[in-house]
Length: 327
Image 1 (tube, helix red, strand yellow):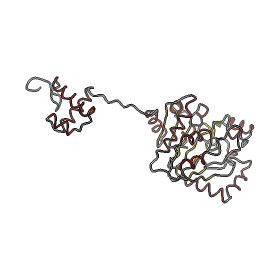
Image 2 (cartoon, helix red, strand yellow):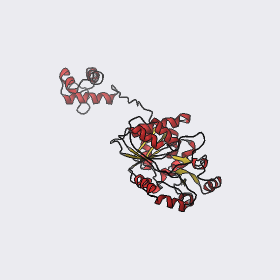
Image 3 (cartoon, one colour):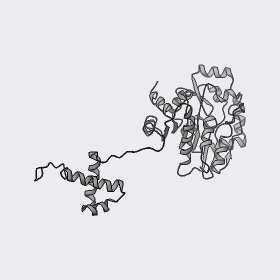
Image 4 (cartoon, one colour):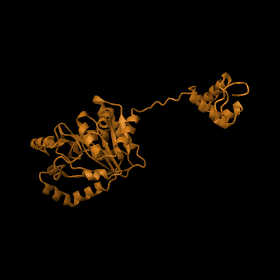
């Protein structure tokens, strides 16, 4: 107790009307008038330590309430849970759903790539509808003349769909850099054909460059309506075989099951591009994914560490977290 009988809490002065008024004055000058603690101390006849204590007491008592209002639509709590649960380097989760999810996720991915520091000198990218959307939302001048390497083979043109083979070129054009294509099919008819093509000097040089690239950006493919099926790289019978084998989708054209394992080794032997093992060793392997048809393949990819940065939407984030420990 103080000499006048008022309760004293620790080293603070008694909280009476006069002190409460002092807290309000200090808080108003600091937060509303943007004055320094030294200025406030001079005006109130205090020292800086006493002003700091007043401001802290104002927060403790609720006289000062600090509200953080995010200007973006990102969901940091879900991002933190994804990082912790799957051991990711980073995560971006946007509060989008339904028809707007692809646009929101692609825009977030474009902003994320443009904000990387230092700016990348080289990036490896895949193709597909999601990656085309990312390329669309990349701002002009996003890269400092970055070299853009295609990391998996292409597919034959699909009627009314022009997004598959121009993603890396768009990345390079917007970044003022150089485009390095991988001029071979994503999947060939026989394993020995792949072996011959990968020994070709031009193809081998691109693959070596892709394997040396530490920053990759790619998406995942659904099993149903797969671009590899629509383009003729795999047959309907092979797709049925993938279903029976438990395949849930593809990563760079390599079909995996829900546990992240290769579903059909015979198709794997016919696939050209970076392997799943290559993805696990990159400094930054950025997976951009959205859509209900890609939930299982996303779970599988996360379970075995095929990416260390995930860009997705709220619905996908909640789903993979709920199923993180499924057997």
